[in-house]
Image (cartoon, rainbow, N blue to C red; front, side, top):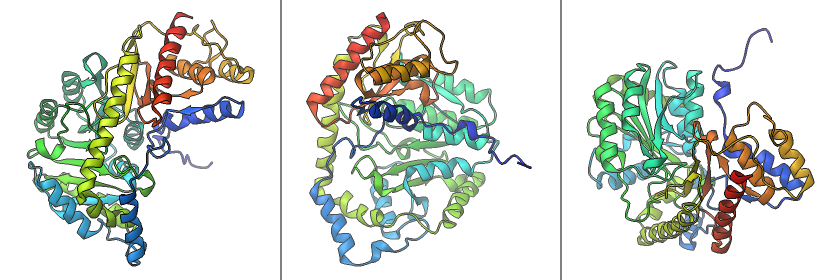
Amino acid sequence: MRNNIVHPGADELTYEIREIVDVGRKLENFGVEMLWENIGDPVAKGEIVPDWIRNIIQKTIADDDKSFGYSPTKGLLETRKFLVEMRNKEGGTQITEEDILFFNGLGDAISKVYTYLNKNARVIGPNPAYPTHSSAEGAHAGSHHIAYNLNPHRNWLPDIDDMRNKIKYNPAVAGILIINPDNPTGIVYPKPILESIVDIAREFDLFIISDEVYSEIVYGDTKFTSLSEVIGDVPGIAMRGLSKEIPWPGARCGWIETYNKETDKVFERYVKTLVDAKMLEVCSTTLPQWVIPEVFSDKRYSEYLKKKSENYSKKADIAYKILSKVPGIIAPKPNGAFYMSVVFEDGVLSNGQTLPIENKKAKELVEELVGPPHERGKQDISPDKRFVYYLMASTGICVVPLSGFNSDLYGFRITLLETDMDVFENTFNTVAEKIKQYVKS
């Protein structure tokens, strides 16, 4: 074309969580029965929305036509006031309804938050990273995402020294991203760690983004600490939504809560830009906003969340018990969200390793993707993706390579979402056996 119309950050827009599905669908067409462990959709894995929540939604639709109309740009005032009251009861930094802005899901919020940053301002995030964040941040800057390390040898705790050094020697960093509870690792950030991150932000005059969409899915003896409880006078943004806890991913309903924008004029102008950008779209989805106060305030909701967390805790224990016995991997037990990330130890993976694949066409596809055994194969296939392809073709189990999470660690993410406990245990036992077989091949 006469002019280059490609965005400078186009190559950063990758989403392995869904891209792996293309290979899985081909295998499915060849007759491989697939078990999709790649995506965090509780509904797709059989989680049932309680009847009482369904009834609230149905009643809201039936009562009048309010849920079919536009909402204000920032979101319904009644709902924002409700959320403010709920958040302020936690203590910590207080907010008003003007500090809440609704989006069409957190994907929309994430896109806006990075798109409207100054292109020279960077946000450092975790490694492994949730690709919606890392891709959007990298794309806005036209450069690879900057990351601090999460340490699998310390139950995925962030390396605070690594974070501080990367911020100190990279003056373009203007913000710190945390995902708490974390996707893909399942770690819940301890309060002292969060306080250390706030101290770093204060020292270097940064703002903080905390993605808290899994805040109600925490289990065991772990306690969740929100950003509002520790942020003090530092500017920040917390992200919340309905997709995981109700669960209602199809509602496309998420919101951000902004803290301390009045303390920094630049941050205040940035937040106004987000509101102005949302104004161009008129509003976010109306129906879920109407039902939030009634659902969240219902006495059955806390019990529902408690039972859900207990269920994930049970499955995390089972998964950890199985995978922790496998030599050659590190498999920290998650204590939040519904994911588990497994890391292969250094030197365990090689390009000559395989798994037996009974389906001839499936075997041909994998060898086309990675190259024949004992040959170097494709230049762009990471060792963990190679394992994932063989696992899919030989068992039908679709997991996501950890290298797809903007990480230099080789491993994979698997979910805790399967609702059939027999299938769940069989899946993890199969993965454990296939790891042993693959490593020895």
